[in-house]
Length: 341
Image 1 (cartoon, rainbow, N blue to C red):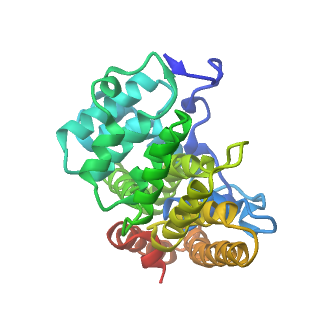
Image 2 (image 1 turned 45 degrees about the horizontal axis):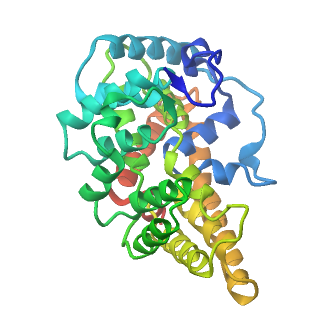
């Protein structure tokens, strides 16, 4: 089984161990991503210092490589829900095995929205043949019905309607999303689970090395929802006035109420490209600039933590690990944007 439209010869993730990657500046970016304090949309902005290459390697590369090997060895034999979720999220080269892992986690803990959302988005990936766990149940509808106040499933349903050229359903789901009180893809929750699993790994590893491995894993976990939202209202043919207005309303709601900066930026961009020319577009562009600025300012906290984790001083590293852990817990509990305040 492979993903439709992908290169079957693509080297597996294990061929370039994540534990062996990264340098000081890159680590700051990785930390920020895993803390969910700087999405790719921020670091890709022109002129962002987070996009600069790093000149130095991490002092913890060897320990991170050892832990990465140990974690992956555990994935081969462990069957608990968190291990299944982690393996399914990070080892995505075999879509059938990935979906099976995520489905096992979802079935074992049906109330865990992180597992519900992860399986739903994995089942949206174009693969041949269709995994049985996806074919038996509409996993996206399952997420939507179990998370009724969350607008992210509605936006994903809108994107599915767009792909099926169902304009009526597209409009209905966009209007539904605009009314939702919150938007969360559970990335912050996932980053905290990743940290707890790496922290629990047996062995005499430095806590700073553990934090950096968890950060590297978090950076590999690309949020699916932001890509789907970026596809909305981009069709070559002009949308109807009703769909364009619904896109703008959904984008504004996302930009103002999403739990993460990556979702807020995706929403602000949706509102910007859907706004009517004139004053409405000027407001939308200002909103996008404001959200990107706030996200970047929040991301700078990750630079100080990254530097502390690389320190030769044990006390400095301990403080950095404590800051890292407290931030992850706060993000998971309150949402990244709220925690940044």
